[in-house]
Image 1 (cartoon, rainbow, N blue to C red):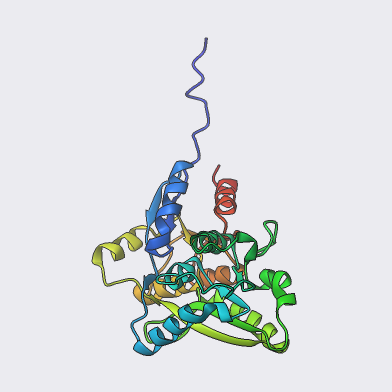
Image 2 (cartoon, rainbow, N blue to C red):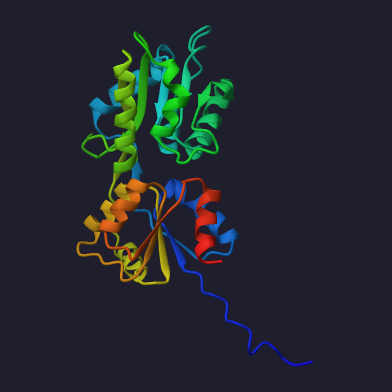
Length: 286
């Protein structure tokens, strides 16, 4: 029998996936990608911390102590869920029985369901875009929750912010969508309040991390961006950064616009759920 190995086509090389999510989220993504045969690099471009401002903490503590007085709570990210529910206890009997909990995407919804279960709150009180939604964002959440808002209703938005207490949401794209949704609520006569559950900061000064970023430029890297803020932090952290032919996979069209402006050679778009990200990657690099 003839040896056909020499004439067999060479396997197409897969790029290394640079996971830019915050450290507290990156591990799950790295593990899942490696399980599917992808080389990965964890390069957190957003640092998540507890709020440092006494004023911000006072507002947060008040929200934690009275969350059941709101008709709905909207969590902008999984990090918002984790940091808000730190220290939250079961409400008094008969309180909070009608409060709804909103999540703009599956990752936030999964984290929220776990937090609610610990408080004995059923998952049917959680609202999120349907699994087949074209995108997972505030715009696709709104049809699911708009009937809950009206004159006299109260919404609490649990978000992140900058180290100086300036709101940043989950990046530019998420912030824009959240502002749009809260405007819809106010237009219906609802009262909207907000609290900042965590700070979002640029990466720390770390020479080793910087070198990893520089080494990840070029055509055999694809950067996974789930936040416009991560792209912005990259450019601030490494002034003059050039992608040198690297691709980017963005989990929202607005994030893709930011990545394009940052000079990535090719920018793909996927819904943010892990199966969709894997499908997008594997469609380009089988």
